[in-house]
Image (tube, rainbow, N blue to C red; front, side, top):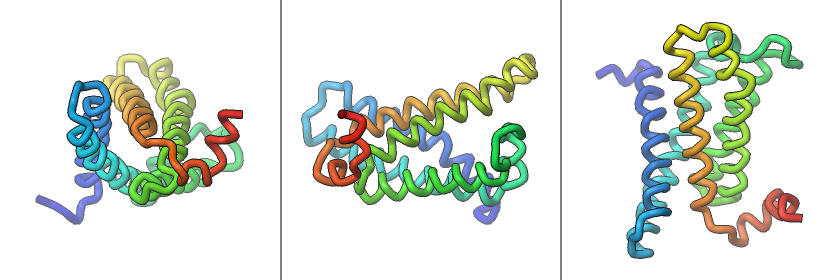
Length: 172
């Protein structure tokens, strides 16, 4: 109804990213024909990638709000980390959409979401345990970790991943 209001796009992207992860998990675990599973992979991965671009944009649209979420003690500054994590979202989204280093990008994205949980979301439960939003944000972040992880697991390791070098280093 209001396409110019960015939060509406974010409100669509967040559950859509979780649903894309669910589709990928289903395609990975269900006893489907290989063609059907691959079709679901080809649908879920790009949807997840586009959602990551929206998440990255939200860091810029809501810069002040997002900066407040970053622990003040974390050097060099809260604003730096907003830009850095926005770049991480953009890079992962582009990698997943293009298929270039997609597995590596999704693994690094999973790690970034884990760090969000440790530094940003989990402490809010201890600070204000009766605030439902804190619990909801923790649950959503935990689900995003799962979605990013299944996206990473669904990308076959091929020539593109070998050229990234990171996965090779992790295996050694």
